[in-house]
Length: 568
Image (cartoon, rainbow, N blue to C red; front, side, top):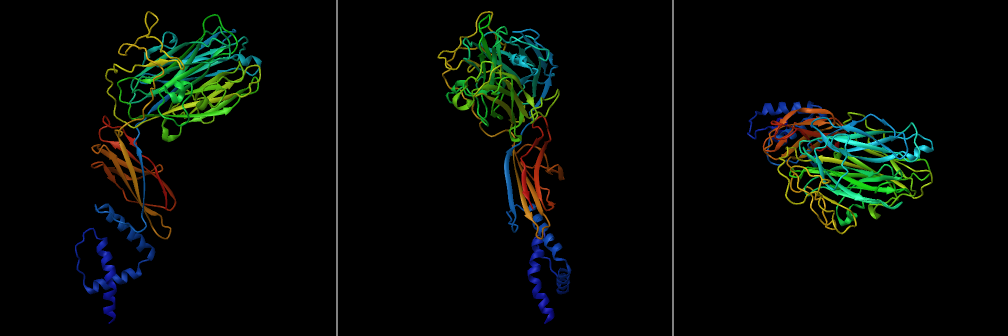
């Protein structure tokens, strides 16, 4: 009878033994063997037995195609695009002293190294602290063909593949030895955007004191706005200066450029420059220039997303004081590629641009920085923020605000574009908000045309040209799913990463990581899927990612997936 009881009690455990076997084949055992197994189980510590059971269950899951429910196992999944890298390096010029005379200006140039192109740029000034600091101001910041000459002619597509950025510092009636200007070039290297073009709009004005002139340059259809700049002339009009330079949209919702792009809007298609004449008129007609830096027509930029980050703060409102404002790219939005700044009457995204509270208000800086506002150093590749510095004149300035914009880019397509000929229609459309007729096509010796680019044709700025979001599926995408199997008694748990890669014919391997620690070795991608490795993780929080390494880097670049966080 005792022997009979041992034999019957083995039935449930015998089934467990069979379920743990990778083969479902019956393995006969003698009664004496079963009795031995029963005694061995009785001697096994409960903690080891439970852990072994869960490990075995996970192994069954990884070796069968049928879905398996493992007790209280949960699935954490987050789909994200495997983003091709967008690399930006900041190049910084040395500070150029001056101006040393009133109603004058100085220029300084930052140049991108071979293999990279201007996506945007900035300016920073040293102004001193006494009353004469009120006179040093930004006169312009924009692309240059050679580091010295400027684009100051007729509206149109004026250059391509520009690698220089000019910063122009101006003076009012009083100067001091502290004045200097530094230029910042943001140099883009990307397998998706390999060529750029500069589209410029030239606008007469402002002709009256405290009346802003808003010039807007728009990128051609099916291209991407990367950044932009602003310029006012002549320097002899000491109270004339650009007080805003920002991303926007050529559509009615943004008043065709009068309203900037709001925080977290994506894919702006235009750049606005606002000139303000504080009080003087100058010796020549005042002119405001807007520059839009765009990808070249014909390149496939459907996988590129540019996200705007912006921030507005009150001030400066007291005479002879400055105000700093910082905005930062968040990691999911990609790399900082450019930025802008303004001093204004505030609330720009809802009411459009209005002048600041005093005729002497101006900008002293708009540049890449760290999150604390310190200017990026030469050769920096990790700048994430954009800082704007504004300043009042010699009188108080009530109801004045300062704004900063950062453009952040990511790309979902890792394949290099085939830059074909530009389309015959939809060239760059320079336009002036509020006008009913477009500027005429550039003609004569003052016009600027680029070989391979169509001439600028007349077009009504009243038409709506909005930037469409990327359509269709990206060229490379992955869904990272984690099977989580908690182990009882606070022993941690089992994680099974599953990466599904699109396109499914992308050959390569996937390496999983928990934070910065690699989990196991590379797992081959078969028909778009990589499973494993099965890994036992300790109690606590975990952040898993996978990195796809292609077999042929010429077809797909190494890419990193989304992060899945969970806790055992």
